[in-house]
Amino acid sequence: MPAMVSPRLAIGLLVAASSLAAALSTCIDGARGTAYGYEPGTPTGPENWGKLSPEYSLCGEGKQQSPIDIVTKEVVPKPDLESLDRTFSPANATLVNDGHDISLKFKPGTVGNLTVGGKAYDFEKLHWHAPSAHTVNGQRFPLELHLVHRSADGGVAVIAILYKVGGADSLYPQLRPKLEVMAADKCNFAQQESRVEAGLVRMPRSVQRRAGSYFRYTGSLTAPPCTENVVWSVLARVRQITKEQLDQLTAPLPRGAAGDARPVQPLNGRTVEFLNVTDSIISFPM
Ligand SMILES: *[C@@H]1O[C@H](CO)[C@@H](O)[C@H](O)[C@H]1NC(C)=O
Ligand SMILES: *[C@@H]1O[C@H](CO)[C@@H](O)[C@H](O)[C@H]1NC(C)=O
Ligand SMILES: *[C@@H]1O[C@H](CO)[C@@H](O)[C@H](O)[C@H]1NC(C)=O
Image 1 (cartoon, rainbow, N blue to C red):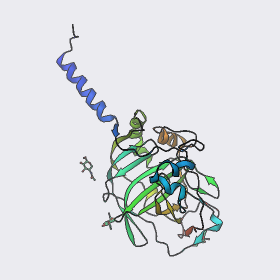
Image 2 (tube, rainbow, N blue to C red; image 1 turned 90 degrees about the horizontal axis):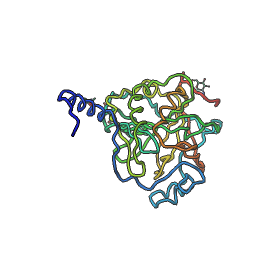
Image 3 (cartoon, rainbow, N blue to C red; image 1 turned 45 degrees about the vertical axis):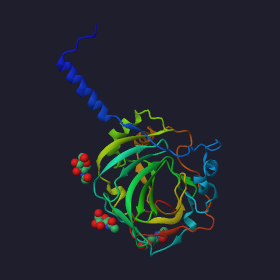
């Protein structure tokens, strides 16, 4: 005998089930590329990335790799570097967890752009690394935000913002409910990524408008395939995030002790340039 359920209760259950479904993230199957990890000394660890796949060869053989340690005493002042000031429009975004990092992806051309060396780059996505990928004078930070921009010809320009534990970050509260949904998700990251629609996201002042002083160098993506000719701008002002926000940002990631920071790479003769913007905050002894 099947249990009797009143029509009203049945409808109520259906509505509850569909709103629950709307709140869940989706595990999307897809080509994930060759697996890699961040734990040193393991077969898929950063020192072995270049050997995991021919597509990852630059990770081992590249001479302009990222991240790097920025030694402030050795940077070259470059007053003619362009200002990084930007204005972003509110735009619909998707939160994506690929098992390595969490990113917020926008439809290109909907948020804003950046001009570097006379070339326009569309803001495409942002993601976090914890702990930081770049170090400054040997110091590693608990978090680094990457704002990734792409030009029409496929060039990549990334603005990196370092965070220390302190006051609250203003971008995070908009994402908090979505991150909680994502943290409850159980995707198989070998074959899937997790996605949550984040709705309209407004970029806070802390990541746009007056970007201030920064360090500039040419490097690579900090994850396989480690593609080079990436224009890096690491902001000289360290931002703050609370310990609780930091923990919640990293909660959805399956991670080991090394987090998702690639070790720093040799400069191989590259120079790091520095733009000193009047009245901007520089968090490091120069
Ligand atoms: C964001 O998405 C919503 C729902 O699809 C839509 O109504 C709105 O116009 C979008 N906003 C922008 C700025 O694209
Ligand atoms: C850059 O963004 C601004 C403001 O959204 C827009 O007016 C301009 O057309 C964009 N430029 C390019 C080259 O996409
Ligand atoms: C930056 O420029 C200001 C003057 O605008 C100067 O006082 C300051 O020493 C400079 N800082 C560095 C690190 O060059």
